[in-house]
Amino acid sequence: MRLTRQHGSHPALERTGMLKVGRLGVLTGGGDAPGLNAVIRAVVKASHNHGIECVGIEDSFDGLIDPSRSRIVTPKDVTGILRLGGTILGTTNRGNPFCYPIGDNAVDFSSRCIETFHTLGLDAMVVIGGDGTLGIAHEFSKRGVPLIGVPKTIDNDIVGTSNCFGFDTAVAFATDALDRLHVTAEAHHRVMVVEVMGRYAGWIALYAGVAGGADVILMPEIPYDIEKVGDRIRAREERGARFSLVVVAEGAKPKGGRATVQEEARGGHLERLGGVGQVVASQIATLTGKETRSVVLGHLQRGGAPTSYDRMLATRLGAMAVELLLAGETGKMVAFHPPDVGTVPLADVVGRTKLVPPDGDVVRTARAVGIGFGDE
Ligand code: F6P
Image (cartoon, rainbow, N blue to C red):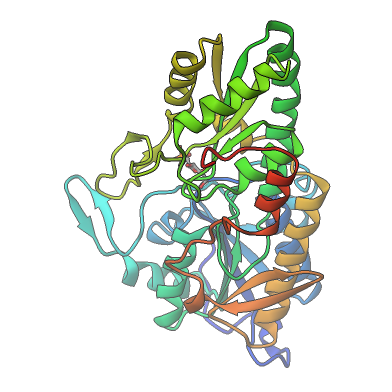
C-alpha cells in the first residue's frame, strides 16, 4: 500500500483540536513487553473514532530510516491482539537513529527519520518504549516532531509512572515459577536459586519474591554479603526448614562488587547482565554444604499473554496518548498515577532509573515476614 501523501490532505485535519492530527504514526521500541499489542490496539481504535488514520512504523525507529518499513494499521488489523504478547510492529533494542551502528561507525539518521515522518504524511507519533526509546523520542520532540511517549518495560524502572505494563505479567510468571520450584526444593531439601530479569532495578525480584514466598531476595539496591545469605539458610535448617528459595535479580551485586555481566557494552549494544544466579548458587553450596540448584527465568518473563492488569493499563495509556495529542499536548509521557492516568514531561523522565527504595514499604514488609536481603 502506498503511504505517501501531501501533508494536511486528510479530511480529519479539518477537525477542531489544538493539534490537527489526520495521520498518526505508532511504533514500539526496546525489548518487548506483554501489553505492547494492547497499546497499539487502543491507539488504533481511539484514533479511528476521531477519524485519524494510523501508520505502524516497523521495528522501532528503523521503520523511519527505511520508509518502506511502515504500513497502514486499521481497526481490523488489531482485532484479536489484545491478549497477545510481543508486538505486531516488531521492535529492536539497538539502532538509535541518532548514532546508528554501521560496521565500526555510528551514522546519524535523525534527519532522514524526520523526512520520512513528513513523507508519510504523519502529523504526530505515539512512541511506545522504555528509557532508551523514550530518550530518542525526546530528541525528536525537541526537533519539532509532535509526539507522546508510552512507558513500557517489564523492569518497571521508568520514573514518573507508578507502573509500567509488562511488569505485572513478568511478576506473575516469576511467582508461578517460584511456586513450582518451592515444591521441588522442599521435596529434595535443596536450595533453589532463581535469577530474574530487571536490569539495574530489583522490582521483579522483590515483587515475585514476596508473592512467591522467597526466603532471600538479592537485588541491586541492597548489595549483599554472601556470608549473611549462608547464615540465613543455616538458621532455617536449624529451625527444621530444610529447603530455601533464593530470588536473585540479574543486576544484584555483592557489597563492594559489580553486577555479573554476560556481555560487555559495545557500539550500540547495551551491556547484557546475567549469570549471578549460578555464582550465588555455587557460593551457597560451599557455605552451607547444601545441595543447590539454579534456574534462570530469562526471556520467559517477557513472553506470553499479558495479565488483565497489564491489558487494562496498556489500553488506558494508549487511549490517553491519542486524547493528549488531540488536545495539543506533545513531548510528554503518559503515566499511571493511581487511580488516574496523567502525564509527565519526557524531559523529566529520560536518563533516569526508578530504583526500589531500600527502606520503602515493600522491602519493610518483606523483612517483616522474615525475608532476608543478604545485608543483615
Ligand atoms: O529491559 C527488559 C529486559 O528484559 C531486561 O530485564 C533484560 O536485562 C534485558 O531486557 C534483556 O535484553 P535482551 O532481550 O537484549 O537480551
